[in-house]
Amino acid sequence: MTSTLWHGFADMGAVSSSGPFAIARGSGVHIWDTDDNKYIDSTAGLWFTNVGHGRTEIADAVARQLGTLAHYSGFGDVAPAVTIELAERLGGIAPIADSKVFFTSGGSDSIDTAAKLARRYWHEKGRPDKTLIIGRTKAYHGMHVAGTALSGLPPNREGYGTLMADAATVEWDDAKSLLGLLERVGPDSVAAFFCEPVIGAGGIYLPPEGYLTEVRQICRDHDVLFVADEVVTGFGRIGGSWFASQRFDLQPDMMATAKGLTSGYVPMGAVFVAPHIAEPFFSGGVWWRHGYTYGGHAGAAAAAMANLDIIEREGLLDEARRLESDLLTALSPLAEHAVVSEVRSGIGAVAAVQLADPAQGPAAVTALRRHGVSGRAAGAGALQISPAFVMTTEQTHELAQRMSDGLDELV
Image (cartoon, rainbow, N blue to C red; front, side, top):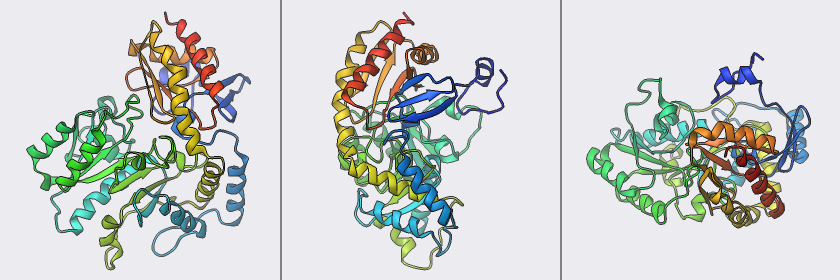
């Protein structure tokens, strides 16, 4: 059937031929399609439904806010009261004390905001030549201009020409690659290094032992801002802490977030800015001419407040840490499956089942649906596992069994 909706990251010829996979409702870790077939949601939507589907508490909070004040511009000295309240609350859980919070509409906005702020910061510090931004191979940083230029996934950059001339990429797992680039181009030309603590959409790759500590120190030693891309890992997904930056003691200069901020109930993003980066803009007389109409949207802020309430009340940071061991136990046997090359897990509610033949990714996703699992293939044939934190131990084993049954179809 012909599709009017143009899906993101899709072969629309194939979608138009087969028809869309239409989701009707969700509850907890499950979703149902329009034919009332039930599936385990193995990806929490797209990394974001941290508290699970069907949380009417969040919906009710949004409805109350929309009925009072839907939104108002956050430009100048104006802001909705709930947005101010949320910023204060987020400041209290930030990886660095006294951080400022700049709201965006989502993860791609947050990355572009951090890229612009890094350059503008150096301009204000009298070093306007520090403009180069650096990303890593396999990394995904959203699909705005800066995020696309930073992408370590060549297909995501293909066909757009040169979006930003002063963007570069280093190896994702080799700190010496970053150091070598800095030595070649000179640190006086480099504004910031963007780093996903756990690589997400590029295939779910855990950081090599000691890597994050080493690149963080390299950035300090060479006066390069360290930007933690926690769009995926933020708000508990890494387990035990609100952010991976806390678990790995990264002390970022900036941190880009979105997804888990509202558990995906309403679009919203936020950039956390360490006090020394904010200082030139808070000392008076400097305008940063940047912002979004819906940045800090009042309805989204209400959703975020309710979402944070649930995470705290139900101890979901600890539940994500429990999933770290549960997923490792349940999924590890899949490494022996005939079509699987390895299982990557062991940090929070994040894992991947790597297909030996990446080309089988689309077929695997379809096969899993026939066995009651809704998922996706990320990177080069990595089946993404990033469930809601409310997934039980029993459900992790059910997920693994259903995946095994689905993968049997590919043998």
